[in-house]
Image (cartoon, rainbow, N blue to C red; front, side):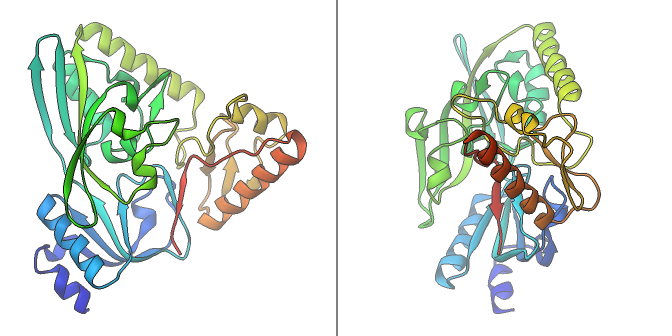
Length: 302
């Protein structure tokens, strides 16, 4: 309770939750409880939480939209901090248009705002169910484009509460990876370099991508998107299907019949169901093909 009192110095009571069920905050709809769950919508409050975490030696986990993680059934120790910092600024500079968004802005909402403004280049991200912070961290992408193709700069805060701004090269973007995958930095905002387009063409692309997702991916059931990364010389979903794993089930967790790269929560799955199914897939694919497939999702918790 001492920690709660310290948090209340800067945070509103409604934004501090105890023993919060993480299934409410993840797209898998599974996971145990977070000891302390706080919602942050500005930098000063974030600095306050970082300071308490550091001074009191309490673990701090940063959460975005919860769309690419699996929280264990035992939950998360310490403080779980959901970043809801939002921003949407547009700066026209000749042919280039610089759009700055907060780390808490959802990609789908940004794409709709850009559509209205007739700004193109963000369409590929329109159906990615995440926020800016998570997308930058993992260099999210779809349909041949990634964040690295449109990012101009990112502003972040470190655990000494110092704020930094980096350019594109400093992100060290790779496939589903960035400097933020390795460093304990918290993304505050990112600026995207885009350009003027025709509304009809932008809308056409967004609708086309939405149609493809609906046709090929199981978005009618809780999941965290693609469970595994693609390989350098193979398509992971194809390997899983060739190994006869489509439809394989552990408890309420199932390898999607629609897209074998997805594990879905079909019927009240636990996180352990999903973890057990992941191990079965990894082992069978390795035993039958010699390929070691890697997770794209992040496993979090005790």
